[in-house]
Image 1 (cartoon, rainbow, N blue to C red):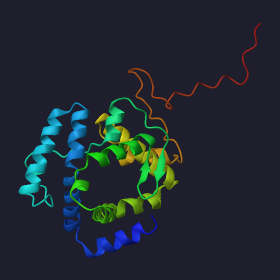
Image 2 (cartoon, rainbow, N blue to C red):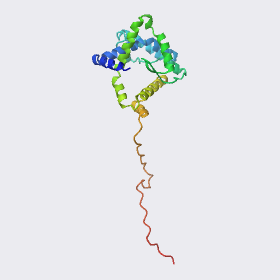
Image 3 (tube, one colour):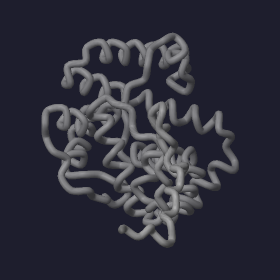
Image 4 (tube, rainbow, N blue to C red):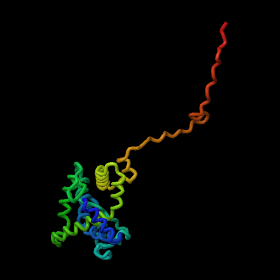
Length: 229
């Protein structure tokens, strides 16, 4: 991981964002069989049909997937894997893990990687050493696209390990539930303690009653009360 950042920084220096985005599109297009099969396993036939159409459009009009005209045509991109499928089926994620070279994961997602590898069609047509090199390129390119986000997180997070763990767990839960991941504002609440609580707002008093803090002062009693006969 310590080698990845400087390599990704060097790649970001020589390759414009448009080039790196095209590389990311190409590798994402190759995930078509994995995404489509998991769409079907999660009972999402409409999404599966959309992903088949995306693959056809981006592979032809998009020049082998380097460009993404399908999104402009209303064919939304989906991000599915067998780890999510297991989550949809009710399998709990288990404890948080950090896998060597692969990064954040869980027992459920790690098992899903094995099934996803079997669903990929590239090993049937491409030699193993080429696949390893392609995976390295994909990893470096993906890292180069989030350099600023990672640096900001390292600079601002009180505990970077907890930041990554919580962000990963929340993102995977959102993917399983097909819901929006929490925004940055909500995530920051997990890592920072407020310096002070804001003072409660004063609600307007009912009509006819004085405002709080504006109560009339009681009249001072006489210093020497009158004597009783």
